[in-house]
Length: 292
Image (cartoon, rainbow, N blue to C red; front, side):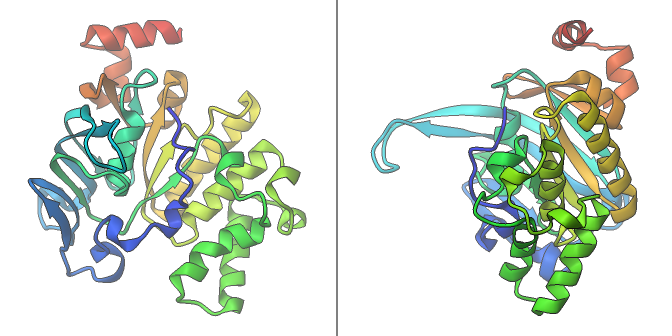
């Protein structure tokens, strides 16, 4: 399931989406709490949790459907008691069939949707997202350079010369050629558009990235290039990823650990080798058989 229907750039999310403690005040531990649900950015604790970038604790949530101007309607729970962590420097895969709740969970982690129950704790500044379809996630009216610079303009910390320097440095890092810096999305190849999307997600130097089906719209050759880029960036920029995909072969190539989701529940998790070589749940076995 893609999240491309979300038109708000995640690198310009409103601060009320979740607390800014990790980004602007490392000693703070502010949170949005309401009726037992919490989305928090906290300072890093000492001890066993000091290698975490994210904790999702027994989270439940969903949507209201029907109603009128947000009133009334029926509530449908989509996420059921989901519990996991993302560790510093790892790529954690999230797999499952379309409609199983993967992108809904991502919205909760990003602060776009509040959980009804449970707690989501960020140990780093706000995460960013790389979308499935870069063409629909980039504004067709603006150039490559303008698009990647926009988060820095919103941030307001740097002058124009410094913003331009940072943008060009990031575009070069993700292998976007200089001759397309002033091009618009419809003038780019699919691979170039995805590289621009990656640059825009990384321009404010987050430590945690959610990648929602980032290579499924690309051909096999370009997929391999983008996967290699994501791996290289993990090392160069000290990143951690939550990598959402329905393609188990891609997950096996890229990820360190994997979560298997069925109907909004995590039914199995472990290292890629454990889950792929010795699956315990029948659902996981069915997904692996379908990928052969």
